[in-house]
Each structure stands twice: as structure tokens, then as C-alpha cells.
Image (cartoon, rainbow, N blue to C red; front, side, top):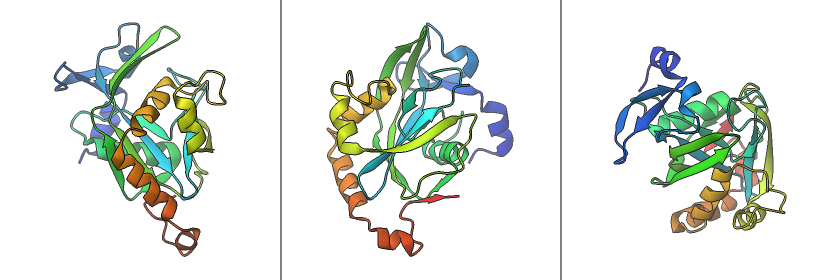
Length: 213
């Protein structure tokens, strides 16, 4: 586990990777995302409810990169020495006010590059999946402008050709990751499992694998 002191020291840094995906150090986040962004470690999370909906968030307009852009449920950067799964829990707790009980990494080797307003993203970005039945109400306003639920089937269909769809202005990585998720047998099994969770179990206090705090 990474201590709070480590978190306070490293929260504004990203973990740099070599071509073999070995960690080689850190770089301040404010200079990591440029026209020549070095390869670094990240994660991306997709949260679903029992109605087959995906939780999406609009990034805060004050953010340095991709400000105001809509994207998938949560994204972030692990700290040096931090397990990626721990980073998923940490960031969802901080950004969305959500305490997750379990997540699963479905795309451990996903890597992408994307360009926006003179800035390149260049990340090894494992994609995680989890379940959440309630809408986050206490999200961190410095990180998240708004949250919403969208129909996964519509989102997935649009990912093949977002232009002209209602999701045309979503982050490019959320579209790329969605296309890869659709090819994953494990993801399809998880999605079916999420849809089988009943509202009755949620109302009885069993929140599946996600609780709003």
C-alpha cells in the first residue's frame, strides 16, 4: 500500500515507462502532457448498472487536459509503487465519491495515443470494469463537471464511427477502449452478470460491487 504521505508527494506525477513497459521514473504531470508526451502509466474504468447503462463523466472545465470533455466513468494515473487496482479505488473514491468493492481488469495491455489542442496522450492504460447501481452525487468538482448514465448498446454502436452521433465529442480513448471491450469475451460475461443483478438486492442494502458514499 502507498501511504498518504506518498500520495501527497506524488499525486501530481505520472509514472514513466520504457518500450518494455518497465517503470523508469516519474515526471511532473504539468509537463508530462505536451506535444511530445512520453509513454506513461494510466488506467481507465467503465462502471455499469443493472439496466445496461454506462456511467460517464464530464471532465471539469478547469482541468489542464481534455477540459470539459465527456468520457467514461473514471480515468487516472497510478503513483510510483502503487498497484493499479489500488489507484482505481483511490481515484473513484476521490473523483466520484464512490467506494468500490471489486473491479476487474479486462484489457490489461491497452495502449493508445490521442491528440487534442496541441497535446498528445501516450499511455499504457489497462481498462477496468465494475458495477455501480446508484448515481454519484458527491463528486469532486475540481475533477468532474457532471455525471450521467448512457445506454451501453448505443454508446458501443457509436464507438465504431462516433462522428454524427450523440457521442461524437467524447474522449477518443473512451471510443477506442469500447471497441476493444466489445471484442472481449470476458467483458461480455461481466456485462451479462451486471444486467442480472436485481433492483431488489440493491434496495435491500446489497449494493453489488459499488456503493455511493
